[in-house]
Length: 223
Figure 1 (cartoon, rainbow, N blue to C red):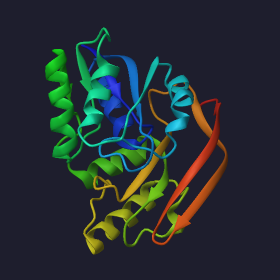
Figure 2 (cartoon, rainbow, N blue to C red):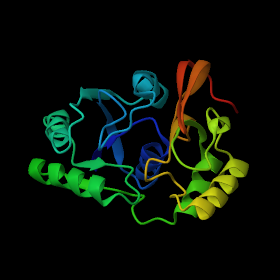
Figure 3 (cartoon, rainbow, N blue to C red):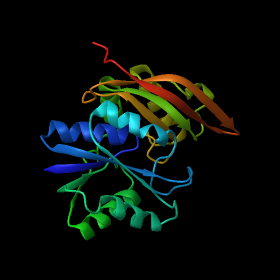
């Protein structure tokens, strides 16, 4: 099928694209929704500005659409972004959020498109480890007990994944950050033709949460 992938630059949507390609689907366009702030009910916010660079790294065309950030009205913005695309289906990185999955399915149904969520119902601990082993992921936002400022900018490698799993068991958070406990940015993935290099970063910390906003460029893949 010809697929439009909803992407944010984070690990879940990126790994969903990877799964789609491995299953033989043709991902013909990336769709990134741009909320006005991190208060969006549906969409990822930290480092959304990097999506044009992310699309170039993937070698896949990008559609960016602004969204109001208001609950339910965000769906109208998504429908506007998807309407007119010559695709058969929409791929999402939904893992466990019924709120997100059902609303995207509603939009797809109104447009006559299939909604594909290849990560839905996965084993979160095993899947997080799979992600770390095949993608270069950094943490760009934290907002949960146990996740201190030292996590900002940290590579989510195998060691970090095991620590994240331990923290999830201790504090009751979702291992993959499905509840907004942390946000990520993918710098390289199997289907990237080039990798993203962080030039500089601006970490911020307020009370018990923080973000890691990056400036980046494209680099050659590491063999």
